[in-house]
Length: 137
Image 1 (cartoon, helix red, strand yellow):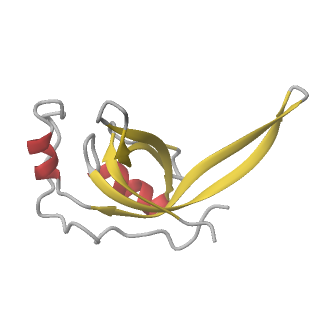
Image 2 (cartoon, rainbow, N blue to C red):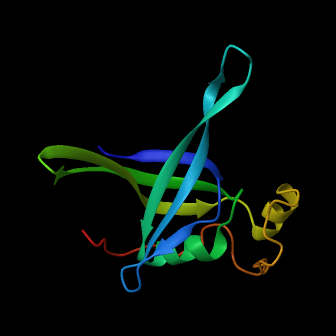
């Protein structure tokens, strides 16, 4: 079974690529379950890829500091560069759940958030995000 469940906060505003084949990329900071020798909690920074409707919703509603839950799978591949085989691994989100609202992100960001963003408080959070019916691969 290839299933990955993550809960964390976005490190910056998601980016979107492509016109018809929408792809959204964002990095999720996921805290580890333990502290290091200095008593500090460390985090892993995981790049997430989403497609189509999920990509549009992530780009539209998520921002730096957004708390999300991601159900994903790991995709591996390879390609040739010169005469060397390069192996790849990516985390592809199947479901992204918004765990806080735009308003709470603005309150928690302490001025780091872009103040020109519109509020989407009347949007139904969480769980109202449409998901992709089919994947492009």
